[in-house]
Amino acid sequence: MIDKSIEAFKQAKEFIPGGVDSPVRAFKGVDSSPIFIKKAKGAYLSDLDNNEYLDFVQSWGPLIFGHCDYDIEEVVIKAVQKGLSYGAPCLNETKLAEAIVGLFDNIDKVRFVSSGTEATMSAIRLARGAMGKDDIIKFEGCYHGHSDSLLVQGGSGMATFGSPSSPGVPNDFSKHTLVCEYNNLNSVKQAFEKSSDISCIIIEPLAGNMGLIPADLEFLKGLRKLCDENNALLIFDEVMSGFRASLKGASGLVGVKADILTFGKVIGGGMPVGAFGASAKLMDKLSPDGAIYQAGTLSGNPVAMSAGLKSLEKLIENPSIYEVLGQKAKRLVEGLKQAADENNIPFEVTSRGSMFGFFFSSKVPKNFSDVLKCDFERFSKFHKKMLEKGFYFACSQYETGFICVPITDGEIDKCIEAAKEIMKEL
Ligand SMILES: *Cc1c(COP(=O)(O)O)cnc(C)c1O
Image 1 (spheres, protein in one colour):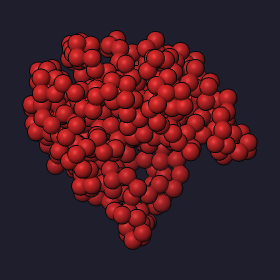
Image 2: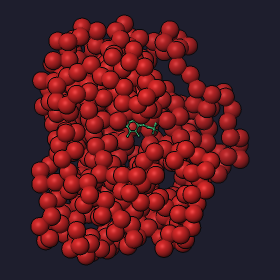
Image 3: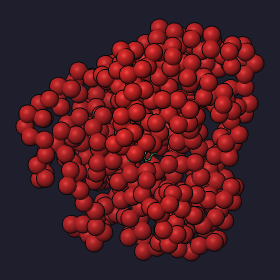
Image 4: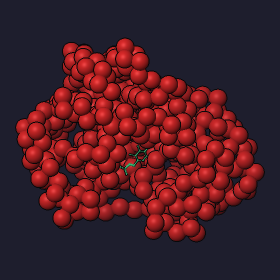
């Protein structure tokens, strides 16, 4: 029974477009009504009707320690008591920047912003400003937030100059974004043949916004080489994969080095934080020392910095967390796959660190057009029935799932048992 959520959604729709502040929350992809959350603790969410759900969304990634982690809560409460915002520098900004720089040898300096969208938007401005070129390359199916240059779609398969994927994005902007196919190096070579004005390539080195699709190592190495040959910068968007796929993100798993890294989600421990980092030579081109403008009233917010710093400290002190979370993610997806196999349902799975994905498909997708061929109707039924049984998965096959520290093997096994029942009905 979710009567109170249904009523709350009706009311929200009167005052908020679509009833939500971020579209995916509306459950449109699964043709049902969103759950309104009353509170959350550890691995669980509680809704307005007092149903409990084992949460595999974790606020879309940030909460690697689950809800209400004691250590993070403690530093946040202390920070709150010292003032919510100063608009002036505070020590935790430097400490968090230092912690990040210490993890990546391709980053000397970091600038904080308040969202992943701001991080990628600013990283692209930095790349364009530093290289003095206007075009960028992105990949179909990768999501980098909702800034104009990145809400762009291409034709399928080949490199194309993009067209806006949303009304309100001027053609004059989108024409500077070349859209290529994920895991297809030829499409990137074509893009460099089409344009001599390419400043950067931006990519999720572990794609998490078309389901979970790892980039092939040879593909990433190829991108690095093409950037070097064409005097362009390589941006790894690690907003989702950063401190999630491994302590050093997807970069840490593949060993290919980008020129600019972008972060968000886990880096704020549940508070709104984004960041981008690069060599000192590049970062010093930003204002106030350099000419490339970038700013934010609430950037480096003291409360958000304290949450981010505590999360990162906990991860750095306990690097074995990733192995444990990785085993749990594997346990879950292998169990789900077995449940599907037993019922002859085509099903493929992936996991990297604490991230997992599954597709109702007979072949592992390598790019966005593969994902489009998955069985969305089956996914929708699966999602609805799992939710009824108290398991909260992302409400779209395009999303990635997350394991948090408080989730136990026993809870994962219960989830697999539920899936075994439900797969019989699909
Ligand atoms: C979530 C996400 C973003 C956007 O971050 P917001 O905080 O939602 O603005 C950018 N890039 C990737 C890879 C993401 O997963």
